[in-house]
Amino acid sequence: MTDAQFEEYKQIIEDEIASLKLTITSLTESVKPISTDTAIGRLSRMEAIQAQSIAQSNLRSKKMRQQRLEEALLRLNRGNFGICSVCEEDISDKRLKIAPESTVCMDCLQR
Image (cartoon, rainbow, N blue to C red; front, side, top):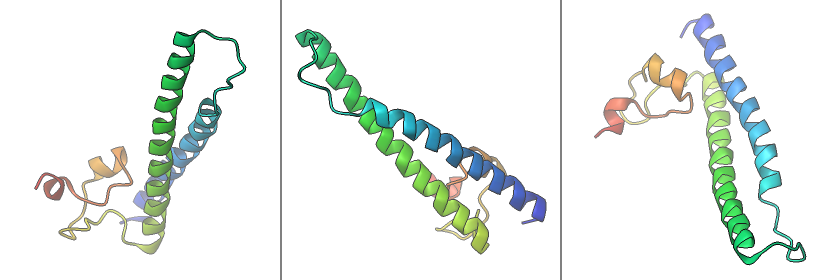
């Protein structure tokens, strides 16, 4: 990996992490418990609970992706970023630019 590629991937990963942190902060507000003393109708309360459940699932997903991106940044710094954990071949640039947290190449993923 060239220095330019290293810097490009580092920037992509850091930008994604920063974006996720903002999203996570926003979602954290959405998952706060629904107050039972708020005067809303039964259906509205059910809708609010459903929306909260969706937000919780989304929050978990974002936190997991953030963790995978932080691990990708560690791999980048260690020098083993972009190498398939199954076949040990290089993961394509195209895949890494879209999903820099990838640890498996497309061939191994499709097996």
